[in-house]
Amino acid sequence: MGEFVGIDPSAAEQLMRQMTVGKDVLGRTRPGLEAAIAESGASWTGPPGVAAMHRSWAFLDNTQRDLKWRMDTLKQMVPNSGIGLLSGYLTFDNEAEAARQGKADAAPIAAALKQHDVQNSAKSWRDVTAAVAATKEKLNDPAYAASLLAALGPDRFRALFRHWMKDKGPAAMDMGLPPSVIQQGREDLGPIAEAYANAERAGRLGEVWREKFMEGTDPGMLTALVAMSKPSSTLLNQVARRVLGRPLTADAPSSPNWNLNALVEAYDADPQALQTLLAESKDAASSLLHPGRWRSTRLPDFEKRLAGVLDKALGPGAGVDHIRERAWFNIVNGVGADGTPWLGGQWIQNALVLPKFKDSPVSQVLAKNVVPYLDNFARAQAKESSPLLTSLYPPPPWDKLNADVASRFLGAVMQDKAAADTLLKAWHEYTTSMDIGQFHPFDSDAKMRAGFVLRSALSGGAANLLLEGSTHAEWSDDEYADWLAGVILMPVDWLSNKYWPIDNPSTATARDRGQDDAKDALKEMITNYFDGKTPGTAETVAVKIVDRQVRWVTDSLAQHRQKPLTETDQDMIDKAFRGRLFDALVDALKTRGG
Image (cartoon, rainbow, N blue to C red; front, top):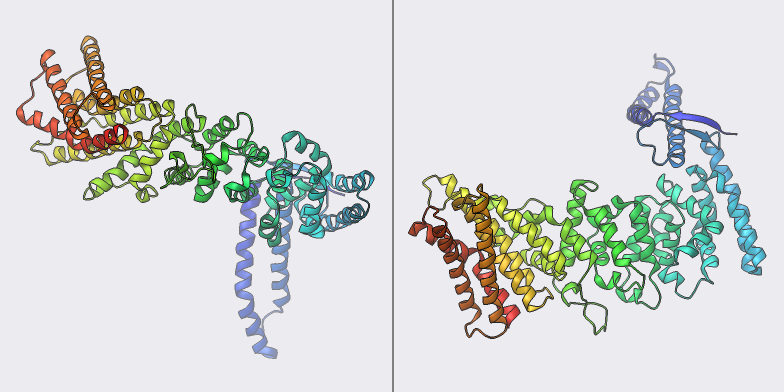
C-alpha cells in the first residue's frame, strides 16, 4: 500500500490546466457531434468515435483528479516547500482507497462516542481517544480526512470537543482555553482537529462544514480547533470573524479571554492572514482595534503581543502592497469613526471608566506603520478644503477617506505621547520633503505658481489634521503647548530651504538655535492662554502667534545677513502661515483652553 512520489508543482499545475482546456473542448464538441451522428443514423460514414470521445474526456478527468489528489497530499506533507520538487511516501494507492479508509475509520470513533454518551467514564473516553489516535498517520491525505469528517458529520465532530471541554470550566465554550490545556487536548483530539484543517486547506469540505458548522459552533471550540492544528489562512480568518463578530458584552471579563490569545498566537505565525482579514472585513478591523476588546482580556502583556502581530501584518513591505493598503484604510475608518471608543465614545456597556492610552504599544505601532500613508491623509484634507485642485485627490481607496475620520484617527493614536512624537516627526519630514521654497506664488511661470499652490495645500492639509487630531490628546497643558509649538513651526522649514542655506554648519546651528528660541516663545504664549494669563480670545492669540512667526523669519534673515524680503515676500509669508494654520490653530486653542 502506498508509493514514493515526486512531483514538480509548477509543471503539474500547468498540465492540469491543459487537461482542463482539453476537457472543455471535448465537452463543447461532444453534444453537437453526437447529435449529428444520431441524426445521420445509418448514413453516417465516419468512424465510430463517440465512445472514444467519452473515454478521452473520462481519461483526462480521472488523470486530473488523481494528479490533484497527489499534489494535495504532498502539499500537506511539505507545506512550506516553495516551488521546488515535492516528494514523499503516499499512504494510499489512490484517492478512492483513501476515501474508503476514511469512512471505515470513522465507524469506531462514532461507536466509541456513542458508548461514552452512555457510560461517561474515564475508560469510555479513553476508547474514544484511542479510535481518534488510529487516524493520526493517515491525515496527510486530504481525501482520507474529508471522508473521515463526512462520515462523522458536524454533530459528532462537535460532540467530541464538547465532551472534552465540558469539565474545563464554565467559560470554556465562550472564552476559550489557556495554552496549557490546549496542549493536553492535542493528545486526545489533535488528530481530529488536523483532519478538519487538512480537508479545509485542500478545499474538500462540503458546504455544511464551511458555513453552518462555523456559525453553529461555540467560539471556544473553534479557537481550540485552530490552536490544535495548522489552519489555513482561510480557516483562521473564518474563526476570527466568528470570534470578533460577537457583541463586546459577550466578552465581558468574567474570565480570561483565551479566544483572542489563540488568534494572536495563530496570526503571529501567519501575519499575512491577519492582513487579509483586516483588508476584507471592515467590521473585523473595527472589532479587533476596539480598545474594549483587547484591553479587557485579563491576559498579561496581551496588548504588547497584539501590537507585535499588528507590526508584522501592517509594517512597510509586509505582505501584498494593495492588500496592506486596504487593511490600513479599514483600520483608519474603524479607529477614527464617529463616536470612536478611542476618544471616549462607546467603550463597554455601562462602564464608568474611560480608556487611557498612555504607554500604549498598539498606539505606537499604528503611529509607526501608518507613516507611508500620511500623504493620502493630507490629500484627503486638501480635497475637502480645495475641491478644485483635482490633481491632489488621493488614489483609491483613500479617495473615500473623510478628513474628519482621518483627524480622529490621528487624535486617537496621539493620546500616547510617544506615538504623537512619531507622527509629528513624520509629518515634519513629509512637509519639508516638499521643498516648497523652490516655488513662488508670484512667479511669472505658471508651473512655479502651481507648484507653490499645490504643495501649500498639501502642507496645509497636514498641519490642519495634526492640529485637529491633537485636541484629543490626553496630555498635560505643558506637554500639549510644547507639541503645538512644534507643529506651528513646521512652515518655517520650507522657508528656510528657500531663503536660508544650510550648507554652512555654523549657519545651520544658528538657525536651529533660533528655531528653538522661537518655539519657546510660542510655547509661552500658548501656556499663558491655557492658564488664563492672557485676556485675549483664541483668535487674538492665534493672530499673535502668526505675527510672531513672520517676525521671527524676518528678524532672523536680517540678523544673519541673508537676502532681505520684499514686501511681496513678507505678504506671501503672512498669508501662507495664516491660510494654512490659522483656522485649525484657533480650533485647537478653543478646544484645549475652553
